Length: 582
Image 1 (cartoon, helix red, strand yellow):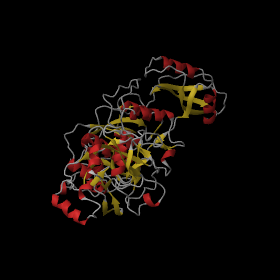
Image 2 (cartoon, helix red, strand yellow):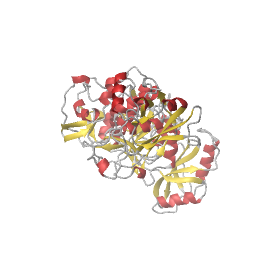
Image 3 (spheres, one colour):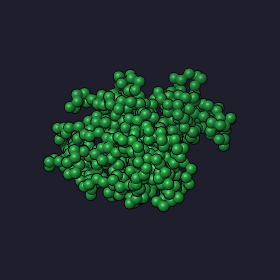
Image 4 (cartoon, helix red, strand yellow):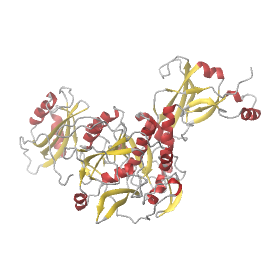
């Protein structure tokens, strides 16, 4: 249990003093070049080379920590210089470094004032009986209209539908949450392991008293409770994920901290950090980053390398879009490559006025008045707040992803991105997400459709070509045949489902290709034929001669905002197809 905050560094020394009279302290991250490629090791040749490089700098170095990230060598240094610009330029001019970047300070918002709740247990229709669930129901139930303290609302992500159908016997899925100010809480399911990058040990928890005295608010507890608060226990609030625990990593202090959050990403993915921090027992399944800062260019090399370390190992990194009302490309870490970005909508299904925007957002979820915990107790009362921010949209998406992995099995990051976007609920026609140019993503998160689609994808039932009358009585096709033109026989009418649970999306297209049986289904094959090109319809009817379907292999390709995936095979089902008259 933590009560004090200290900073430990692996190397600390002073060198040649700056000549500046009023020198300022500058925190930098430098990427070395021309050093041996080795795995992370406290005594490696690469670390010695980095120390030698730092020792030769004509600056006063107050602190230095050396790290290896994805075989790239970094030093995090604190120096004195006339200005940030002077320090960066001086280091670049040495020619020893591939990049020199400021150690950007990221942050999280504190909770707004504690609201008054309508406290009531629920028991109807199998809903959770947690005492605050009435305040959560509008956005955790199906998309729909209603009235609450805000007036009329239009929101909902249908986690209720997930809970009703989920298999609760599946293995526990682990979500790594890199955040700050965690405390032990009786209603949050935390793993029995964690990390504190700030104090370089494996105890991420502080005491309620310390956090309350400093008026920090426990952002880490808030984010974690959205994911893994114990549901249906007649207490507190309901978490969204099924069979999921949070692995906490403390990277912020009172809502603020530097690029060391990137170290937690690698630790979650199985990397060794050394310096008193034990390795994780096994990598997490999902990573949630509800932190960030407005930053030109959107990402630093140090953070990108750490994200790459996780995504190359198949771990999806869910990040909040950010709360600065700018394009996500100008925000860290939402401007990094490979992340899955969650934007925020408000009670009216509009873009929350603080939410960042952009084509890179996968989906949005409710981000205003989200019920979540802070510290366990304050003056004898449970600390339940209504938070606003994309910080609380991201854990809903992370919870949906974790639940889908638990119910369906492993999913690739590209599969997750596609299914999130394709199954999302379209915004209503009056939503600012449609009327304005500040893009909110493909739609609003539909947790049930997403999880169901993941299960169907793994069972081979999500995409297919089959008779339009599959599963119907023969008389149905006979009746339809009487109303079809003589040129369209019912035996030739087939359904092409690219995603049987998706909605039409203007930014998602589908294409169908074929090759003669045994041929390669890839865009480089000159024999590849295009059957359907760039349709926005995830399911449609088309004429096929049954011999065509029998003699060819078919494949589909999806594109989101013009970013296209490789062709994947699509199942052709000839069962229940009406026979054509010879």
